[in-house]
Amino acid sequence: QVQLVESGGGLVQAGGSLRLSCTTSGRTFSNYSMGWFRQAPGKGREFVAAIRWTNGNTYYAASMQGRFTISRDNDKNTIYLEMNNLRPEDTAVYYCARNGGLASLTTPLGYDLWGQGTQVTVSS
Image (cartoon, rainbow, N blue to C red; front, side, top):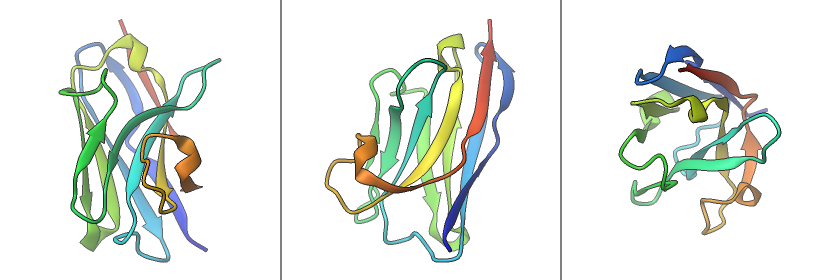
């Protein structure tokens, strides 16, 4: 059974950086677009970034543009989320997910496989 496993979360001060990783066990995800979402307490799941498998194009939520970078290493079956200049409002559980083939990459409904999440806490 294919699983997604995130790692790299933690506690960081405002202005700091973290790199999240998402690896897959079992079947490769090189033919899938992948995304990162986040969910803060009491809020819905929010799109962060995505990378399309066909051409490697990347997409970001407006508030993450210029601070976050999504990338993938198909040989390692791993995607990354590099987060710089972190803010307290970035505090959330971050999830990686596999897109089920829908054209839209920015809505959670388009994703059919999710990791368990990794906590990111940014202190002020």
